[in-house]
Image 1 (cartoon, rainbow, N blue to C red):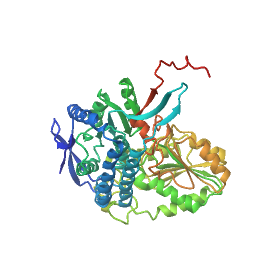
Image 2 (tube, helix red, strand yellow):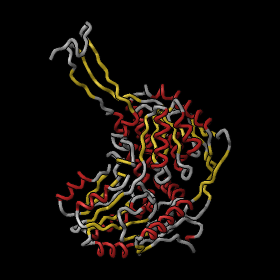
Image 3 (cartoon, rainbow, N blue to C red):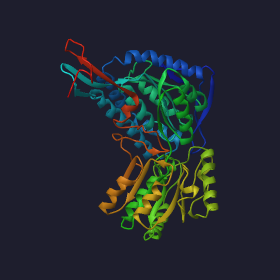
Image 4 (cartoon, one colour):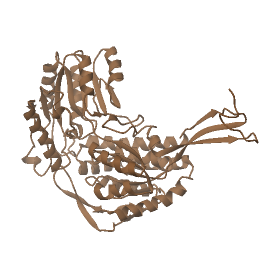
Length: 493
């Protein structure tokens, strides 16, 4: 199967005619061939989106929302098929694949509801016989750049609020996971979304992504990916005076205090650290544990880790799937060597899995380091794999300091039975997401998603906050006095 660009309601081959293989990370099987597009393909997509947006913006918002309801209905009917495709191309286990598709379904229905809200404000004027209000206005053509680890959920976080707000979009999916984008193009088509509202251009970031950021008619860039790449996106977008929304890396921690329910903490740590094989921006990479329960927690973690099944995510019994490709394997393993050199003690894992059903796939053993100092590279840098670093502390205050002592600020968690510590933690942890007695993963679509410091630039995906990325505020004044009235001059209060 060859995956073509979806532009102006049609599947089209790119100008260059080049294709790249899409490979199942579980077994090396080639699943499809994906179009590798050029800057001219981006330009064609933007022209289609720009023409369509003039009409789309005039469609009443509840009518725009009706398309999202239909898209959500089709996704719901097709949920298992979409989950199977997702697991094949990305590798995450099938229950996670189903969960990710459900997230997209939830976002469709949630953002469809905003079609009858999109609230502005009315406010008293300081002048007599004058009315004042603010409204949300669409921006125009928006550019979406999405990663491979959540190939449908993150795309829906961005595209659905853009649609309901009256924008059109050009979407560049990750080249590793284009099949979900193709499936979404089929759904857009089946839902009769007007031609040009949704446009998908496949290709490399260096070619397609750069062309999108540089294109004068794309007014917004919404990007999810690494902090290194995000910085480049921000620099290029800033030069072109675009609104740029960035959701980037994380170095997330679970804090376990001496009064914690350790069995519950272990469950949360394992899910957060090893779900999606650690390839989440919200993955737990650090466990900050009070010295009085450190040994007990480690022993419980090791015991549970022994029972984790690793393999092809389509197998319902498997709990950890492969990582995305060989390059990711090598990066993860390089950090294991760094940790050893820094003096951390390796308790489990630390190896690329080979032989038997691991052949031809990209599998890394769940890994646990202990005696990790908070300043070590394995405790500071994003590894993006199934690796936990255990850091010992002797107080609540020290735990907060260690949690905050990284350049990222996405997600944090604390396990404690002390209500005072719980409330202090939600106040003092400097992350965009805080969990109490739960792991670092599990965000819900009706709340803002994003982080502080090196994780983002102040914008948020998901929830009503996502509308702020894809709308401009417009202030409207209606003077029905029949005379010239000058604010701040003709009034004395």
